[in-house]
Structure formats: C-alpha cells, structure tokens
Image 1 (tube, one colour):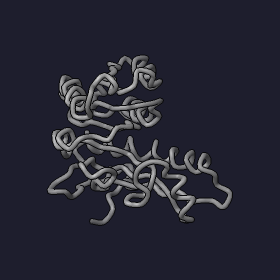
Image 2: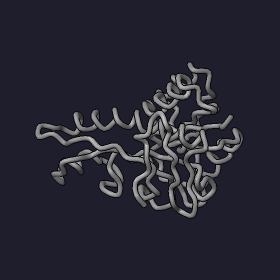
Image 3: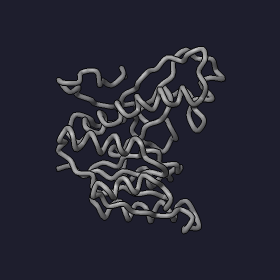
Length: 213
C-alpha cells in the first residue's frame, strides 16, 4: 500500500475529491495524514471525520520560512509517505524542502501552465482575454508553478464570465484530473525520470495522458 500525505491551507476541496476517489475506487494506497499550516483550515475537520490524522504545523510559530519547512518536513516524514500532495497549500516552499521530495510531490494549479502563474489566475485569464483556461497537475520543483506537467484540463472562457463563474468551472475539472493523477502515481503508472514525465494511461480512463514532451 502506497502512503499519501496531503497538505492544505483551507477547505481542501481537492483533498476531499482525492479522499473520496481513493475510497470509492479502492486505490492501492492509504491517505495517512492531512497537514495544514493553519489551525482554522476547515479541511482538517473533514479529514478527521474520515479517520485520517489531521495535523497543524502553524507557520506563524516559526521565525523563518526555512525553520517552518524543516518542522513541516519532520512531521511529514514521520508518516513515511510515498507521495506528498499539495491541495491548496498556500506556502512558497524552500529549495531544500522541494529537493527532499523531488519526484514525489504533486501540485495542482488553476491555470494552463506556463500561463498565469502565481495568484489570481482567473482574473489574469479574464484580463488577458483568452478563450480557454483550465488547470494543471504538475510535479513540484523549486521554480514556482513551473514543474513538469502531468496533465491539464481545458475549459472555455465565456463572454459573460466573472472570476467566480470561471473559477467554479475550473475547480470542477480540478476535482477530476487531480485524483486521476494521484491514482496514477500510487499505481506506479506515473513517474518523473530525468525531468521528464512518464505516464501510462489507465485502460479504463485513457483520457489521462501526459502532454507531448
């Protein structure tokens, strides 16, 4: 059984989607912990209700980003995870932390990377006047929002879209592609080799395919 640790900062809707998929699809994996940098993250209550260890490592308790990341790494490693999943974890991670989990840490970003990195991605997309937008699952590297792409979902940008309506449409797709990507990893169908994504599609869900390298 592969071991999954999920990091959140808020309500963790992607975390919920992953937990539901792991249970319903009977993944060969166990979600062993959900860890947040915020005690008020409502996703912790959901995790605890599912019988998953729900832990807080408050970033405000540490004087530097490096000190927080060291403490966070210690808590994560106590669970011996095979993969660390960032699900709305709103912290910029230090290079040593990222290097420690190289090839086994995933993130989802609400844009079609490399477009619209950082925050306010839906506002950026609307301001740019793009016709399509979406979400990207990627391996985490020290280069923020620029790690190797695993899979993307595309949604149309409608003429009357607001940030809220566009965000809702993207989030719906996040809840589809992120569980599929994590499942591929724990089933041994997804890996990062020499900076390149290797993904074997599920015969049942062949739509999950890595973009051309």
